[in-house]
Picture 1 (spheres, rainbow, N blue to C red):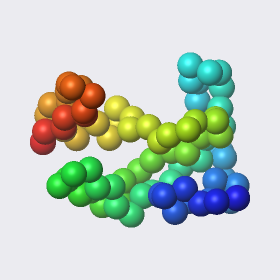
Picture 2: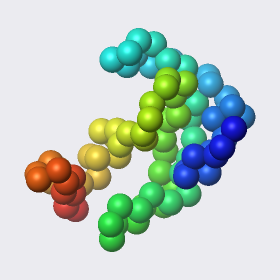
Picture 3: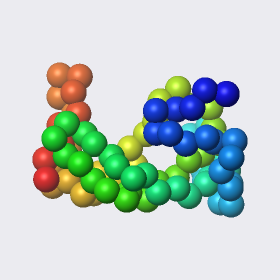
Length: 82
């Protein structure tokens, strides 16, 4: 199984929680990301959750996005300001 860019091996995680998604209930595994970098913004030791659902991409949750004072989607781009 290839490793995602985050460096996590989903098959080796402990799925100890559950979450409701638009596609139904999924198992969840808490993780800590060493670094999250978006443009010039870098955050360290970010708490995150991996879910067992089939997603083609990673998602930024509201718990992370709350770190920003402004969130906008314009012209096909996500604009974040601290």
